[in-house]
Structures are given as structure tokens and as C-alpha cells.
Amino acid sequence: MNVIDKVFKAYDIRGLYGDQIDEDLAWKIGHATAQFLRSLLSGYERGQASANRLVVGHDMRPHSKPLIEAMIEGVTSSGAACVNIGLCDTPMLYFAINHLGTCGGIMVTASHNPIEYNGFKISGTKARPVGQATGLAEIKHIVSTLRRMPLSASMAPVQQADLWAEYRKHILRFLKLHRKMKVVVDASNGMGGKMFPAVFDLVDNLEVIPLNFEIGQGFVHPPNPLIEANLQMTKDAVIKHKADLGICMDGDAARCMFVDEKGQTVRCDLMTALLAPQFLAESPGSMIVYDLRSSRAVAEEIRAAGGVPRRERVGHSFMKKALADGHGVFGGELSGHFYFRDNYNCDSGAIAFASAITVLCESNKPFSAMIAPLKRFSHSGEINFEVDDKDAKMKEIEEKYSDSEIDHLDGVTCQYDNWWCNVRPSNTEPLLRLTLEADKPGLMKKKVAEIQKILGKPVEH
Image (cartoon, rainbow, N blue to C red; front, side, top):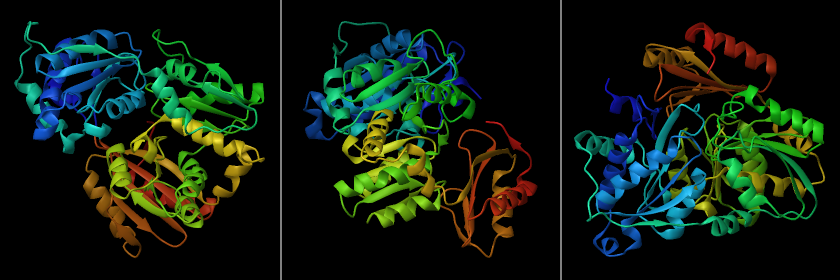
């Protein structure tokens, strides 16, 4: 497998800096992306200066700066103008694409990966995700045909833009605090360390206990809040400071995980269920999207609040499309991505945080008491299994539970009255991922053990 095949993933481009991702590839990605996105413009749009521009930004990794400089050369050598918003979180790039009305943008980031990784997230108009099925395959093909060209006088212009004031105003529309709230925020030495002070400093009634806000010098712990061990600093600080809640962000601040006042992790599907009534109060009868790994409590809470639940396959491209197509108001994934109609259907860790503390502020109950009634089912979380023949194993699951209600929205889902399971393949690894929920803990454990006999021993991931 050549380097290009290795780094082009299902939803983005990612790999080891130096060995797989370098300035030469960055130039080609900039050039190819600009070429592809501009080819999608209508005749009218081609006549608009704003639509012929791309927005670019980068995270805090030490190699992100040289990569974005090479990438900008690639963009402008294609004839497309470029707006560089500099050091930013990925949701800010989504905001900039919409705020400036450009044909798309590229973010230099490796999100939650270790410091030696880097990569590129590509978005089209209105910050629509560009994945394998929506343009990344075409961009990959163009990249494979390119040779880097020297600088020339005919290159399109580059503009530097500072959008922090506009971005702050946009996010704070989601925040309403009428009493004091104390929160712990672990930025994981990622872009939350720049975004959080820029957006939430000087907000009335908000006291922030900052952890790991220093950026550019590596990570105190891996910037992946889905791994329970990485939440320990947040949990300890919440207890120490008697905070109302804590959050831990990923490397590019697109995701966050929540911790209650007792230092307990709050699953993100339960956060979807908790936040849904707030959005439905503002937009009665609207659709809310949730991924199929989520607890049945999510759909129940959406219906109870007068909304329309929509179960969707895992992945930000599917969630955003479902939200847009169904004119939904809000969506959430088990992985910590939360999507908002009033944020161009895009995900945002900052808006998820603002929405959560707004809901908590309006209640006199502690966070744990608000979550407790939502934990009415016993949920396994996502369990990974290394499997060579993924299709054969999923077929085996389907045959074993052939008397259940079965669907293939994403992998195979088998549903009974008192329990359900989903087994879905990883897009990038030889893994099957199991999620299982039952009405009682004993039944949940029994069924997980039953399925493990088919899938083998779980792997840490």
C-alpha cells in the first residue's frame, strides 16, 4: 500500500508527520481540494469572489504551521484565493466557511491522535463534510496525478482574517446563565486551550477551573476524551473544587465528554437525551438525530418532549446530512459529537458545553440527579473485537438472533423487547464494534458474554 492509500481515510486524511504526511503532500492536497471544490460551483457562483475562496486553519501541533504554509501555496497555485484564519479549533473553520460564504475549507489537524500525527479535514460549501463518498476519492485521485510546482507571480491572493470576535458572539448565543456555575475544563493541551479563553472569559456567572490549557508543547495526557483514563484529571479537579460539572475536550475541540459533580463520566447519548427538551422547547415538534449506538432512553425522551426521533448511522457525514435533510434542530453521537441546526448543522464542543450549562443552570438539581432517570437501561458502551472476516461474523450474529427485529442501517442491529445489540464494522481497521443494551444489568452482561463467544476476546482501543 502506498502512502496516499494509507493516509486517505473514510472521512479525512491522517498519518505520521514526516513519514506519511509532509509539506509536499500538503501542497498537493491544497491544490487538489481547491480544484475539486471550485469544479462544483455553478456558473453564477464562479462569478462571486467569495465563492472562489477557501478558508484554511490549523491546530497547535508543532508541524501544523509548515504544513498549512505549503497547503496555502497549493491552494493559491490552483487559482483559488485563500483566507487563512490561523490557529483555531475545527468548529471555528466550519463557522468561517459559512460566515464568509466560501466554497469550502481545509483544517490542518489530527484531532485526538498523538502529537506525532497530523492530517487534513476537508469541508465543502456550508461546511458540508467531504468524505470518501462525497469527494475525498476524487481529491485523492487528483493528488496522485500532481507534481509540486514552484512559486509563481500568477498565484491567487492570500488574506489573513481574525474572526474571533464574530465566533465568540456566535457561540454565546447558545449560553444563558442566571446563576453562578463553577466548571472544570480540561483542554487536553489542544485547541480548547486557545478557544476557551477567547470565547468564555469574562462571561457573567461562569467560573472556569482550567486544566491543560498550554498548547504547542505536547500532551499531558492523550487528547482523546473517549478513553476513560484521560478523564481522571477532570474528575479529580471537579471533586477538589466542588464544581458543578467538568468537561474534557479532544485535540481540535470538536468534541467534549462530560463529568458530573460527583466525578462520574456522563455518557454522551444521555447528554443527547438531556439536551433534547431544551431545543424542542425552542422549536416544538422538530426532529432530533441520534446515532444507533444510543440508549433507547434517547428516543423516549425526544418523544416525551414532543419531538421526532431519527436514528442514524454512525459518522459525522451521516449525522449532518440527516439533520439537514430532515430540518432537524439538534443531534448527538455516543462519541461526543453534538450537532446544531443553528450552527450550520455542524458539531461544536463549545456549543455543546454552552448548551449543557444552560440546561443545568435552569434546574436546581445537581447534574447527577438530572442524569439518573435517563440511566434506566443497562448499556455496554462500545466494545471492539479484532475480526478477519467481518461480514461472516455479522452474518453469524444475524442467524443466531434471527427471531429478532433486524435492520442493516449500519452493520447489523437485532432488537428484542428487553434488549438490543448492534455490531458494525470499522471503516479503517479489522475491527467489529459491539454495542448492547438491556433493561437489566444481568441480562446485559449475559448477552455480551453470549456474543463474545462468536466474536472472540475484546481488544482495548
